[in-house]
Image 1 (cartoon, one colour):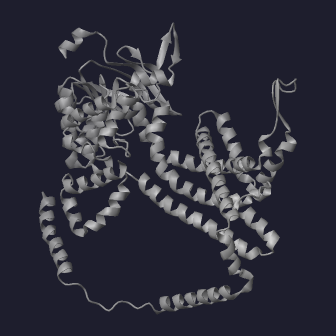
Image 2 (cartoon, rainbow over the protein chains, first blue to last red):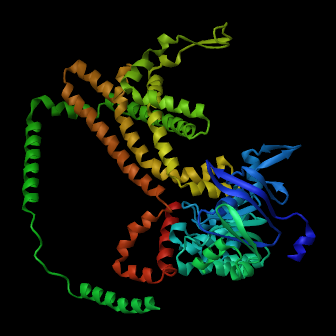
Image 3 (cartoon, rainbow over the protein chains, first blue to last red):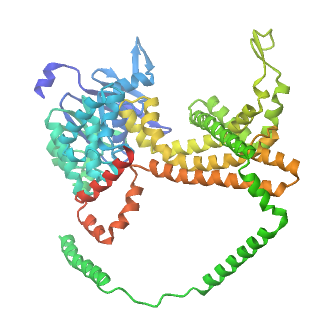
Length: 261
Length: 338
């Protein structure tokens, strides 16, 4: 992590007073936070606190209404020219997403394609990689997530944990600089959670910058460099995971943690 | 702590139960269903009487049926009917896809136009539409390109609708496109939103998302009703008489019967040909549906019962295991694809 701060001064993700509403419902109220290169940030909080929405804003699956959100110094979803903001064309927005991998709560694997076919789609279609090169890389990635023997399985024939690991491999196939995890273990049977967390731990150890929305406090304590507790669309508390989990300052944090720990 | 203990207790019980079921088959006197038999006998009797009567009835003219069923005029007309069906369905499917995408467009004008098309073509009888296309060249004798109400740059005589075969295809296709668009739209909407989201998150464009992710999955929903539409179209082609086009199966059989004064046998001849085609289409549809259900859980569910109830406990006990079962299933899926 010290190395990263030397290589560039730009943070991987920088949010400055980010707000977002759905109709009259204010989901995010002035969120400010910074994630540096190689850092793992865990976001915890009750459901409906806006943590997933914030994650989705980072790769422009949702658009930000107010404030500034930048990935590697580049505004997400907008281009600034003078003091005016221009919305990006779909193509430009897609280009920004190339370097950001995302893993969903419900895996969202393509059910009509095998594991390996799921992984090679984006490299082939977006990066114009050859099928053989993409397939070789996909097999490597499946090996890495411990599913080398499941390459030709359809998602329906894999367990939830295996599907989520394929989904992680699929995101990694684009060689992202940043990985977003939206409650990656929430839809899993309890005995399958560990295998997914193990893959994520390995990924964190390899130096990947990660933002993880999770309810797994053990994972947050062990892996995260920093922890954010969100409630009602605001960051209630932020800091080192040990401190927040061990000695929460805010009442709302205390109330939440007493229920989940 | 209590869960494993319970599990251990319940496991032998299940095993015992299975042993009982396997060991001694239940021998009970089966429940009788007298009414089923009575109803069946009555129905068969009715049908038998009808068939016996029909075979003797002079009006059916069975000799004429035999004479005309393989008549060259009839078989050629049957081919025309097939051509009308295929051409109009192909155009209808392409146009239907376009209309479906238009209806899902964020542009309200584009969406509105697609809706208007649907309203118009689904809200009027296809027979009336065919009559209209038959006389449209009277309304628009020349087609012009140029500034509206000014002197035209190019004028071409509206010859397209002089070819009644082409007119029939246009008329049938435009009507069918309205129905196809609803089928395609339902298919596209059936694909989980998460699929599009995952595809977008992988930086794929809208076109790529549609082509590689959404449409292949929508096909499973689109194919069965489309098969029904093909069968329906085959029969609807008989309405081209409204244009009037009379070289199709029904038109030709009617033409022959007008000369020979034997309408009933020729109706039967035409019906037998329609039945032949629809039967073949039904078989074809069955196989296409099977092919497009690849990768879904449904096939797995279809197969598992063959393995017997015994394996169910094994699968439940080892959720991650059962590699043999999984391997087997993937194997079959692969075989189907390559």
